[in-house]
Length: 197
Image (cartoon, rainbow, N blue to C red; front, side):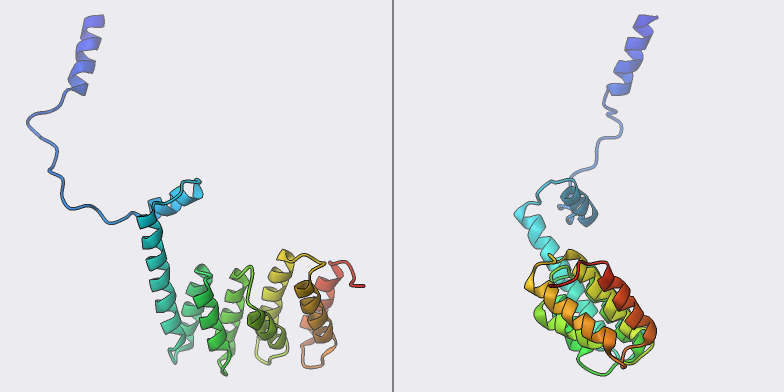
C-alpha cells in the first residue's frame, strides 16, 4: 500500500510532457489591485510601481476634473465623487475652482462633501467651507458643515487653525443666513469640544 501511495504522489508531481507550459510573452502590465493590496500589507512598492501609481492617480484626477466642466449636474457630481477618491492637491484645487462659481445645489453638495476626504486642506479650502455654511441651496450648508466637522476632528484643539474654524462656526451659529437646523447642528457640534478660553 505505501508503494501505491508513493507512486501516486510521484505521478501527480511529474511534468506532463504532452502539454508543455506556454512560452513567456511580453511582460504583463502592473496589477494595480495587487499593488494596492501590497501597499496595505506594508510592502513598499518598487520605484516603477510607485511611478505607475502616480500616473494612474494623475489620469484619474484629470478625468474627474474634466467632468466638473460638464454643463450636466450628474457629470459634475460624478467628477466630485471621483476627486474625493484621490485627495491630492490637484484634486483639491479642482474642487475649489468648481465651487468658486455659481452651481446647482446638488453639484455644490457633492463637491463640498468631497472636500471631506482632505485631512489637511489648504487655508483657501477652509475659508471656502466657512463661507459655504451660509450659502443658499438645499443641503449645501449641511454639506459644508459635515466637511468642517470631519476636519475639526483631525485638528489639535489647541492649534490656531482649530481656533479659526471654531470661531468661524460660532459666528455661523448666530447668522440668520444659516438654516435653523444647521445652526443647531453647529451648536451641538461645538458643544462636543472644550470651550475656547
